[in-house]
Image (cartoon, rainbow over all chains, first blue to last red; front, side, top):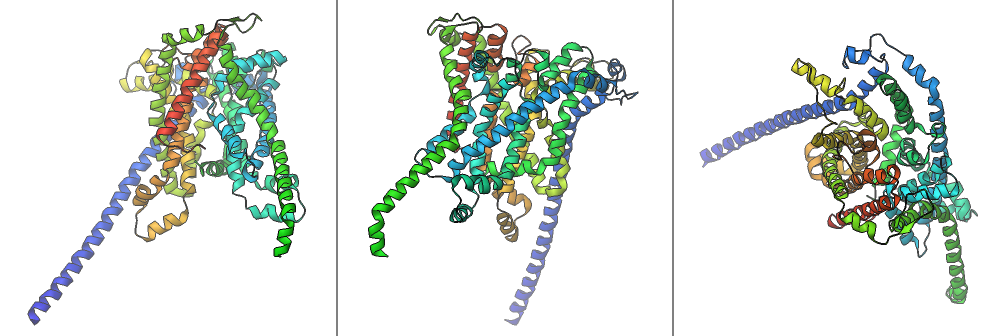
Length: 305
Length: 309
């Protein structure tokens, strides 16, 4: 009897030991496995980094070369000598005009779009009325209408009103096509603002309109700033409408500047690269400043998705 | 209290009605500008596209000849249109297969790494900041046979002058464009998935870790299933986006060589604004609208994407 119990306890101890060993083995194994996983992850990250940066590197390096240096030196060679005249040439040949026209169109369209979409989102998020779900669904459904389908009728409309070849002709379509997505995101955003804020304001004697301007609008600021970034980028880069509506070079926006410069210097690749660099630069700077807002606003929009 | 409420019932009803009326008035006022703009610039043009599709019209002269369904008959037998639709489908399939998985992997990497990986996020996002036009110009030069990146690389590897013509030959061009599109749009889906991960309650992660889950197990069994709806929405966006694709392809190949990269939108644009055949161009646009809507509806039904994507 005693022998068997002894044996049992010994066995038990052995088992325990084995279990312990197994546990540390499993632990070590999982450490190794996660190490390998991280190794692959970093490799993948590195590949993506190279793929992302190489075209930018190509653009930047060539923008500092003389016209014929590019073919002689090869693209993987640093510019020798560094040549800044391309940028001078681009800036002195109307680049600022293109730039300022884009700033004007984007600024006016963005301000209008933000005001109008927050106007529309407020009742959709906060008021109970019969048509609410239908109006909301209709606006959201507009998101999938392709811009290019509307190109011919809008061109016709703009020409009939006598606005063709003006910057103002772009504002209507830019605002309208930014609205569905913006109303969708802002409605989701405004729904997250606690109802009590409005109720207490109402008790303090605020009517709906005061409520909107004093409470809801200021509280939606972070949602609005994200919309400003996304739609700002889209409007800044918009091509199809601008290319169709704007005819004279002195009315063209920045995305068309690329074609304009290419038309004038078709063989001078470095000049074209300088134009490209200058046109992306403002976006990159804005992005680095506002990058946190970008993800946060996406989160507000993605909640519902 | 009781008598009071009984007495005030009629008055309350009147009050409720008055409130509903004032709500309706306020809602109308607030919604008015948005609805007007959407009507003028989205709804009306879509309808007008269908109207113009019944005419023979060059877009300039006042003379428009009503020809009924003639344009639509032409469209149904138009090989070029169906060929470009086929290209759109190829672009769609490969866009979904490339952009979304890569975007998700990148987001997963960033989510696992936290704040210290911010620099990766910034660099990976850069392509999305460039306009499609700028990307088109950049890649036309970067993929050129003379002094382009790929040809130069091939020359170095081969040790002798080698040219790789990615945009100038028929089957290559479309796949090259799909690659460039992936370069441009993957960052968008990356941010989208980062937002998705961010929306997962941190207590879920904490609970999983306390229960002994590893990071990998958490990802595989909790986070990725929770991303399901976001994943479907991303697919829908990519699908619609690739069916209406225009800007980059227009500036890169204009549909060439020999129509091998022609998409519905570029075909429509060519007909309308280069050949001034606005009647038929509108028919192509209307056909494009029908096809995109049908595919999007089919997709949302099959995958039960919530209405409000």
